[in-house]
Image 1 (spheres, rainbow, N blue to C red):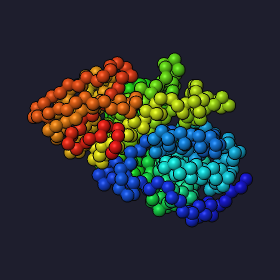
Image 2 (cartoon, rainbow, N blue to C red):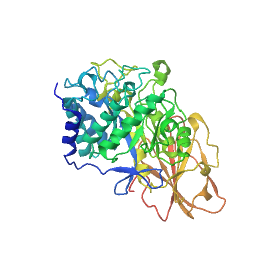
Image 3 (cartoon, helix red, strand yellow):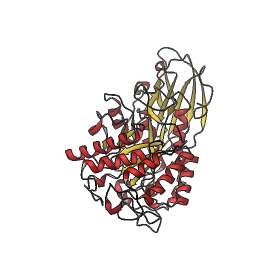
Length: 459
């Protein structure tokens, strides 16, 4: 096998200069992500866990170009993949480590990782890179093995990656569907984070991807290296209240941004049981709008067929049923960027979750309504999942003349409702154009003197 010692390989890569998207950091108020030049950044990721492990360059080009064209700006992928990533070679016949030793990365394997990083930057995509899936630290289930069995190995592999991708458009994601069960797990993740920061000079954001029903905040919220929290609301049932998980992290001190990094995946069997049905584009839309309106700084979309890049030559994982090339065109993937366009069409920084906008009950489960507004109350968004009427406390808005719109999460199109003369104590009821399951709408209320473009346009 062709490999280089850690220090040599990392130093060679660190000397090369690349021109990709600007770096990212946390906003001054701790609620959002911004680019190095101060422009707000709405994190909209697609899930591609097995990208480095299963795809050729040509296939990766197809996938990445599609996601960039649709409007995603982050790709989540794993270096040491979940499904026998240490024992089954990548599409070019290369394993990532020599003799499963984290101190001996295989240069040939990382040349493909480098190519993906390059291509992402050319497409203005950030790569949310997991150094390893969690089973390589905690083989509570899965294949493993636990190759990171000492802090020294975790640190050296983190430092190798940090140096190699020091000047690249990377977000580091530790964890990989695991939580620390024992003190040694905490120690190992801390060592890897320290290695990443020593390698890249602290130039990249770091977060932690936990197992379902958990958040990084439960284990690492006070850690200096954890830039923002990530939770996994998961795949157990429709209408999992991810907004409650977002709310809990939103209220923590110190203030940190939060995101649902693994909600229900489109075309995933509900609770891993096809007899219960499959999550649809409607399910993924509800998870997305509710989490963002509850205070998340962005959202991750996933498709069950795409994260594993399933095709008939692979054994389907958890009843995957659609070739990944076909699954690229499932409706949820095209609809997720409409959320990004809506948020970016109005001032993003300082946006607040505010259920007090609702004069009618917020509801529970499938009918749960979420509201968010500008810090100066110059605009408000209300997500209505089922087309039922909603009543709004208009006095929560600052404008005396309000322009009202319906925004369609399925098409990204807006239709004007009309102009409202606001006055103290005004309570207004709005009825969406259509009603019933699958008929979700966003009510948009704007200061008519300030916002002239329809929601989802401009910004």
